[in-house]
Length: 406
Image 1: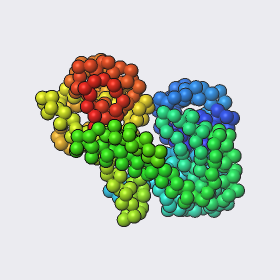
Image 2: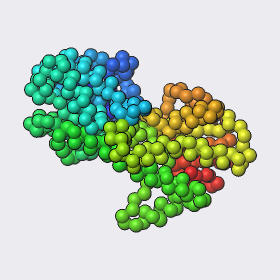
Image 3: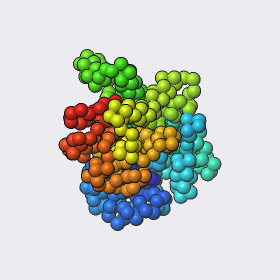
Image 4: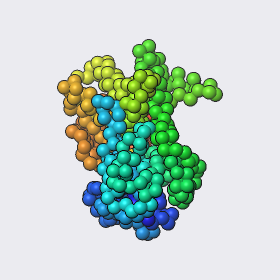
């Protein structure tokens, strides 16, 4: 039996996928609300294909509980935030989960941590916990790091088709865990040591952050000289060895906007490029605000209450709002003692910010200037409704005339 710990954006799809292919799975989460919802037949967040996967997993016998189980394999998928002052990982959720597992684990159990961690986290925080509980690491309890590699909006496909990494200090154990992941993963599964696995996942997300930062810095350069950044990128990308990304209003989510800080915190003085990229991407919400101020002046607008932000999530067509650039922009407004911006997102059903609308038409009626922060399919399909509005399209996804860009 496999006990998956943490039934959020990573843990739940993983548990469902494992169960759907015939593994005996019990999902555990500290939230009674999430567990009750799952036991009552519904999924706590939207994701392509997850409702069907849930139904399949339930048919195969998956169970959900707040209790940790006595079993031979645990998969931990809890969040790993960073401490803003030091930029180092905050391991509190991993420590709590591992401690709870060790309270019920029997000798021979494997603890697989899928949560993204900074290099050395297993050595600094997890291995000592195992030894403090009186277990002999590598004999009584086996530890592996199997970092997740899936993206909200495409999780089900990526669980099957993305390659995986198993970090282990015992190759035999690694091969055993590889067989478990091979029950659903159709791509290559590499076995390496734990520290390499830790570093590999952080490096993947840092690479993406740096490339996004280049596009965002290019947008700033072009704005300063009244150049079309999108035309420049389009032409530059015709070169066979150039692939510049599109700029945007910032970087969100729990991976790209967080993981690079682990390296900055752990390797100060050696991460100058990474640190600059982080600052560049974190500066984009304020850049959007400054761009909006300029547009307001050009159009004689003075009433902030007639400005609307479209999009609360961190990326298009998902309901995940973690580290969202829209939240970062709203925080910047508060720092300047400004407020009143209206907000709408068709995928965010709960009211989580002030002046949030649940009806698109009402939202449009109450604003003159719309800042498109997220490129949901919804706004593309309904862009005709923006006619007559002033629009700042930070994602370059609309086709209406007279829109403004970054």
